[in-house]
Image (cartoon, rainbow, N blue to C red):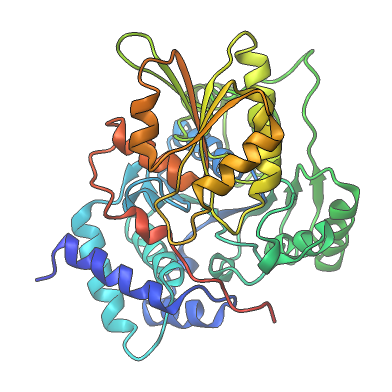
Length: 423
């Protein structure tokens, strides 16, 4: 009988196959498990930033309406189980064990990647749980992402910015084309993208597929609809996108204004502008600002909500991110900076990060720390700390701060080898 630890070790083994673009392996594995996606209804969400928050809002609204809602997201902060949730309850450990055993047997002879395997695990679990609706987040891109084997009720593209250029393309047009790959014939599509070159690509894809396109913009302050409990001005746009999606799907999935208010008021999405107050009054803000657009959003939030504070910044990033420009954006915001390595094979060096911060803010006190624990210890008497950069770092911080009862043994499942070049 397999244990949970053994199931996790098996999933670690799938990382050896790296990450691939293409739908065939996922389709084959889904077919071997009875094509569970055919029994489910989906809202498919892609985009550069804001995917997770928008998914969390949609999930909360539909759950408030009394539906049984599946939620599939990635990466996880601490536990693999975060990726597969029903009514915001993490998939139980025994279910992970059972699904890994069943899919491993079905997958004999095939080389499914970890993400492909997890995608089909989620489909099977959601179908077994008889979910009324699944909020379905893409992993990387959209067109050839494993999640794209489904046909949703609506396709949502939050925005288009620079991230993963090595694999999605080095222009906003190329990135938009990959994200727009989730658009299906006749299925309504909504987007909050505003970059003209990206928007043109999305409009052309929608027209070619006969998919009605709705553009969503941040509502004006006057008459603004209820916003989610998540902090940050950018969440108003994410909320507007979620509300527009709910409105378009009213006939298939009726929702009342009371459901919307209750759903938005109860949204929970850890690690994104998440404020923690420790005994003694120290405040720690956690935010996974892992690309330039995310760093700019964090900067705007700090200026709006913590205008008088000069936080201590603890920062770590992956080497394949645009960390020089992220450091440039964040450097003026802090009087003291600790750079740290991320617990990842792809970490950027703390010394290199420190040099970038010194260049961006010569007046700041900048030090390269051995690890996150050392940086947190060096900041223990500071009134306000911001931990940011990689979501891997944010997950480690949540774990160290006691918000997840885990030992770090599952965070490494977020690792993946560079995917094969797009076909």
